[in-house]
Amino acid sequence: MAGKRWSDLTERQQTAVLVAASVQLSLAATAWVDLAKRPKDLVRGPKPLWAAAIAVNFVGPIAYFVAGRR
Image (cartoon, rainbow, N blue to C red):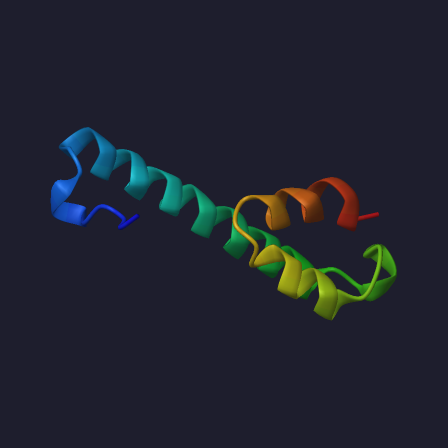
């Protein structure tokens, strides 16, 4: 099954995709900055693992904010 092209989406769908992408990027950027500035003793688990996990869609940054910080 082939995916839709950007031009096949309605204006409302295009807006929804752009909003979701903006939220995702904002969450990830905020989580990475927090991880970089937070001392390692205030992070549950290894920082490199959290840095990679944050890249996983919405799940990674939310998991970091909920479970990764002390």
